[in-house]
Image (cartoon, rainbow, N blue to C red; front, side):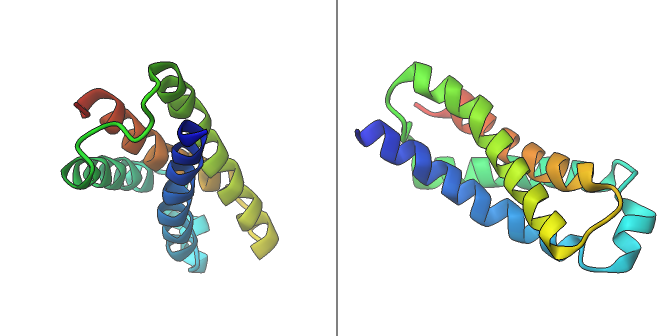
Length: 122
């Protein structure tokens, strides 16, 4: 039971970080016209995910999800959930172009965060 609690808590943390960041970056009209097709924002989201993953290691040096198979499942499911949730919110806000970027950017942040935690935790 405790493993599932940590599992959903980690997903919630990833969502609370990546979705507002995606919403803030995509607020301007120029986002969809100029930046979303290029690789600048995915690289920014990868870097932020890596930095947050490293910072989380400082706060929580041990795995929050004790079971190794649950950690791998988390590595797969958490980024997908975060990306789909961000995509759903973008559609509700009325974004019409480059919707895939509203999935890809939060996905990359959550994946990098989870990968750093998976590989570097004690």
